[in-house]
Image (cartoon, rainbow, N blue to C red; front, side):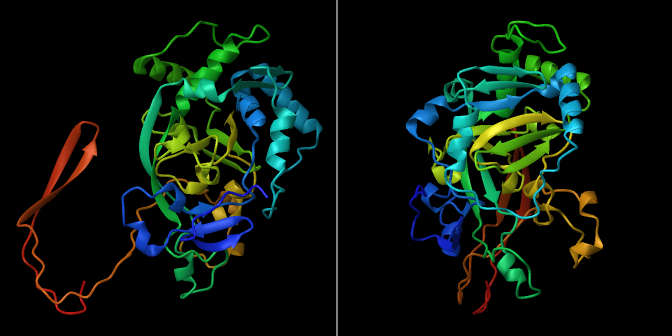
Length: 379
C-alpha cells in the first residue's frame, strides 16, 4: 500500500520485499548512479512515516555502556529473564505498519531517557542536521552481487543477482562521531544521571579535542568494541568501534543522497554510510545506535548468509559459524559491462599515470604506453 514507485528500467528479482538491480549497461554510463536507478535490496516492506510521525521521530543513542551502574542493572535484568536469545534463523516479512507502530510506541517528547537499566539520548532530525555537514562518495554493493554467475559453476542459495547489485552515490549527513558527541553532551546535561566523567558544557570542538575525547572514551571503556544499529523495519547490524569512532573512517549518518533528501527506498529519513563495508552494514531507516561490547544479534550479523567462510568450505555444516567472522570490509571487485569487437589500431598515450590521493598528497604511478594492434574479436 505504501511502497514507493520504482523505475521500470530496474531488473526486478522480487517485489515483496523489493529486490532489483541496475541494468548492466547503466552501471558504467555515469560515475554516480541516479537515485531512481540505484539498486534496491530490502528484507521487509519500506517503512512509512506520516508527517506527524516524522515531526516526532527521534534517533535513539544508547550510551548505557558508559554508565557502569546502569550497565550492571541491565545485565542483571537480562540474566533474570533467562538470557532470551532473539536471534532468528530466518527472515520474516513484517507488515508495513510495524515501523509506524515502533515509532508511535517508543517516541516521546523527552530528549533523554534515564531508566534503571539504560541511558538513551534522543536526537531530532533538526538536531542532527544542525551538526557540521559532510559529503562523501561511496559505492554500495550487496554481498550477494554476481551470485547468478556462480550458479553456472555450482548452485547457490539466495537471490540470483547479476552484477547490478552495486551503485554509487554522493551522500550528505553528519559524522557518526559528531552524532555520538551530541548525544553524550545531551546526557551530561541531564540532572538525573551523569557519565563516569565530570560534567562539562561543550561547545563546538576542534579535531584535536574530538580525538582526545574519543581516546579518553576508549581508554575508560575498553569493553566498547562495537557500534550496533537498529532499523525501523527491525533489522540489526553492527560495525567495529574502531571503524565507527575513527574521525578519518568517514562513517556518517546520512540524510541526503546525490543532493536530495534520502528516497524512501534508500533509508529516509536517516541511514548509516560505512565506506568500504558491505552494504548490509550501511543500515537504512536508522532508528537506534548503541555502544556495545558485542556485535549485533540476529540473522543479518550472525547468520550464514552474512559470514565469511574459507573458499575450501562447500558445506556450511563443516564449520562452526560462531567462529566465522561476519561481513565487514569488502574486497576489490571488477566486472565487464560492455564488450565490443574492434578491427582497428587503438592509439594509447606514450605516457600515462594514475593518482592515488591521500588527503592533499598525490603519488604518480607512471607507466609506458604504445600503439597496440587488436585483431577482430579482441577487447
